[in-house]
Image 1 (tube, rainbow over the protein chains, first blue to last red):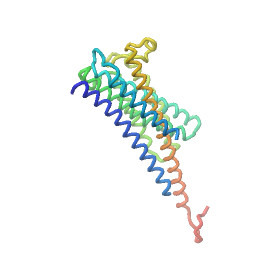
Image 2 (spheres, each protein chain N blue to C red):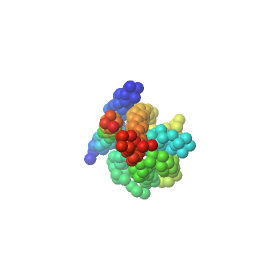
Image 3 (cartoon, rainbow over the protein chains, first blue to last red):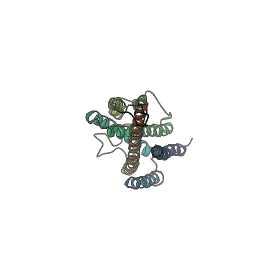
Image 4 (cartoon, chains in turn brown, blue):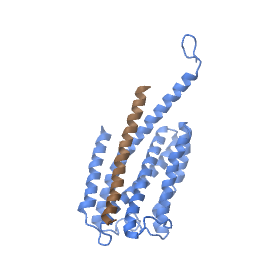
Amino acid sequence: MSDVGFVIAAYSVVLGGLALYTLTLWRRLRAVGRDDEGT
Amino acid sequence: MKTRILGIVALAAVALATYVALAVVPADLNQGDAQRIMYPHVASAWLAYLSFGVTALAGIGWLWRRDLRFDSVAVAGAEIGVIFTAFAIWGGMMWGRPIWGVYWQWEDPRLTTTALLLALYVGYLLLRRLTDDPDRRATRAAIVGIVAAVDIPIVHFSVEWWRGLHQTATIASPDRVLNPAAPMVFVGTLLGMVAALTLAWAYLMIRRYQLAEAELGREERARIERLVSSRPITTSGEVAR
């Protein structure tokens, strides 16, 4: 793999991971909110 | 609303910092484009330190004040710290392969102590699942969080104390704060990335804290419901006291 390939791999995981974690947090927050409405 | 604005500002800052790091700053003369990995790698490592430091301080706060909001801060720091530690390790591996010729070397003190840091806080998160009692969980987690934080200075100073593949500190070394080893254009870009990812970190910390508080409230309501349903009910349908 070229240097650029390693750069792309590094940035993709960091930025993609941040986006994925943010989405997961939103979903977990919504799920807790829904549970509260149901009780 | 303020948190949402923080999220939008953080997103814009991370996008700008990434653009500068990838397309504006020149490549390093010796390392070429691979050096661009330094920006998210170092920023992630610093945010991992910050997260676990917050977890340790919040753990002290819980033990001192017995306020479960400290525990919510602690779990937020630990979970987000684990993520940034994983980012730092991944970035380091992607940088190490083209520069060192290897992704990983267990003999290197920085790499090994960082892997230990990750394992300690994954353990911290697993430990929290062992009990449903919020007080007991917070106490156990606080003790582990404080003890595990001892590894933070060991990770940071490992490159000064022992020899290994990893380079010494670029800017955060006592003799280099005002005289960094890297050119200012690189240092400025690095500080920009640190600032941008710190904004994202702050946003995630707030959201994770809110989630922890919401989960605590749900646990409390479930406990009250269990208590009420376990009490005998009179023929008129009233719950006995």
